[in-house]
Structure formats: structure tokens, C-alpha cells
Length: 409
Ligand SMILES: Cc1ncc(COP(=O)(O)O)c(C=O)c1O
Image (cartoon, rainbow, N blue to C red; front, side, top):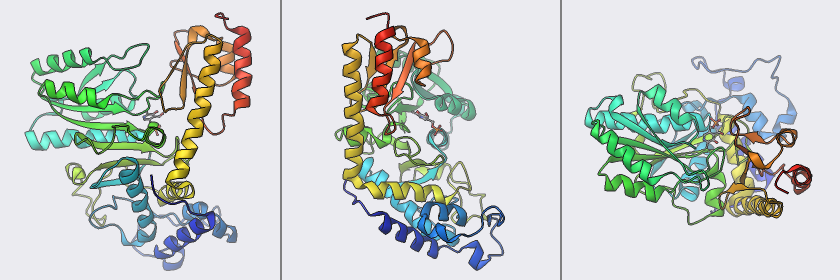
């Protein structure tokens, strides 16, 4: 994590310079772009925008359609595309230890996960001439629901793997037997969907153990990593973690800047190995310069700028310090729970603490806006996500009420 930290003024000037290199709708009045010069009654140009580079980019409304790490791109927006390339470089090289990669900013974890699985499906179809239903998606009971969306959209065979109630680790026995059963049904190709920071528990799948089982079963497989939640914390707090491009089986990874990086919504980051996008490139997108190898098509360049600005105001070391203080606050909260006899799950290096629902009063959980695993009386877990805005004082207020009300005290 070695990229430097810049001042806000340096960042502002760099973004304005990038916008200068774009063709603005206002100044160049391009005749052929189907892009949008924003409505001038609602979005008039205002001098204060010079001080607010993200808002200025929003109002300039560059369209970052396509992927800008290979081939051609729309020349109208090359200034801000360059900053998007810098975002991809930091995420792929410094955070996910990749050397040769492609990537783009997408709408978020859901889209990035579907794109990763789509890429895997098309690869197997093209390479081995198999049907979608002959390809399995392996995912765990704690995986985000975008995994089952991908199964549904892409017509794959689902292999849902159980997790242990206490440790939240996926069952390697169940994984092995599920692969065997699928193989008996003639399924030979597997896309493996693993998570760095599950939505409800923040748990991190053991990628090496999973790969070992797949190899043992002589399965033909590719791995996609959902780091939507964990991508901007776990690699910062656990530098030796293994879920990154150093493992050759990992083909694609998605991170969400609109979670731990505190960016506006619409700031997912899709990364894959160089060449991986060949299987999904839309060769019929002939009006787009460089064609289109994304799921979303048109997308706002302002999202890439928001990510670029946050990454650069912190720098790599600032990012580590930010994440470490969240984990320290999480550990303090865990100690407080322990002192009160309240059971919880916490993954080392993460900032999600998930409490056993039996141990706390439902009214208190609702009063403090904890999120349940499922809404209604069947709920077994409540989660606390220790973000920047979650102060120790607020956690203390919550603790004081569960101490008084908990049936286990
Ligand atoms: C682990 C994980 N993956 C994917 C997603 C989906 O992200 P988005 O809502 O940005 O599509 C979430 C959202 O909470 C998540 O926690």
C-alpha cells in the first residue's frame, strides 16, 4: 500500500485538469454524442463548482462507457478516463497484488459479481462448448444474494454450500460431496464464488482450502471473489491475506467503494486478469469506440473521480491507519460484549460484529438500528457494522441498554 497521499488542493487541480482534457458539452457542443448535457435550469454552471471537483464532474457528466485499461476508448472523455485507470491500477496492483489486469468502475457489488460469473460462464462455454446448465456456481449459504441472481440470470447449476453456525466457515466436507454429486450428473466445470467479508458476518472464506478440494476432485474451475464489503478493509488490516491475484485460480474480484471507502453509491470496482474480458466483449457495440466489455454500458465518470479522490486523500498508509482504527474500535466492542456475556461472531481484521439474537432484546436492537439476518420472528442474528460514524459513545449507549435488558446477565 504505497501510493502517496495528496492534499485536497492537489486533488482539486488534478481533477480540473482531467476535465479540461475532456470535451465538455458546454464548450465543444459535439454533434454526434448521445450523451447528456445536463438540463441548464436544474444544473446551471456555477463558480462554486471550481472548488468542488466531484460535483463539477457530475455536472460535466462524462460518460465512461466501456473499459479503459485496454484497446480504444471514447476520445471525448480521455481526461477523466485516465483517472479511472489510476483507480484500477491502485486497486489491482496495490490492494489485490495483480500484475496484468483489466478493470472498470461499475454500479456496485451486485453488478460486479454478475459480471465475474458471466465471464466464467462464457469462458467455459466458448472453450469447452458446454451448455450453461452444465456449469455449476459454487457459493456458500453466507454469500451475498447476487450469487443466486447470477445463477438465475445465467442459467447455471447452483451448488449451495453449508457454513458452520459458530465459525461461519464453509463446510469442506459438504463442498467435496457437492462436487462429487455434480460430477456424477455430468457437470465438469465450476465457477467458485468466494467472499472477502460476507454481508451479515464479515467472514472471509478460506480460498486455499477450497482450491485444494477442487484440485483433489480434479474439477475444472475458476474463482471469482466478492470483496464488495471486505476489499477496502481486509487487505489493509491483514496484509498476508491470500484472496488476491497472486493465486492463479482467481480470475476476477469486485470491491465496493460505496461501502468501506465511503464513496457515493455507484462506485463498484470490477477487476479481472488481462484478457478475461474477451469472453464478454460486445462486438456488436460498434458505435462505441473500443466496443464494450462491461455489463452496464453508459456510466458516470464522476463515480470514478469520487473513488480517485478518496484513494488519493488517504494514500496507502492513511488507508491502513483508517482501517486499523475501525478494527481497534471493533475489538473494544467485542470485549465489552464478552464482559456482559453476550455471544457474537467477529472475523479477525474486520469491522462487523454479529450478535446472537437470543442474547439481546429485539426492541433495543431496533432502537439502535442493528440489521437482522432476516426480518421477523425467525431472526437469529443482529449485526453491528463499526464504521467511522459509529462512535464509542454510541456503542456505549447501546451496551448500557443491553446490559440492563439482556436475559444472560
Ligand atoms: C458481500 C457483499 N457483496 C455484494 C453486495 C452487493 O453490493 P451492491 O448493493 O453494491 O450491489 C453486498 C451488499 O451489501 C455485500 O455485502
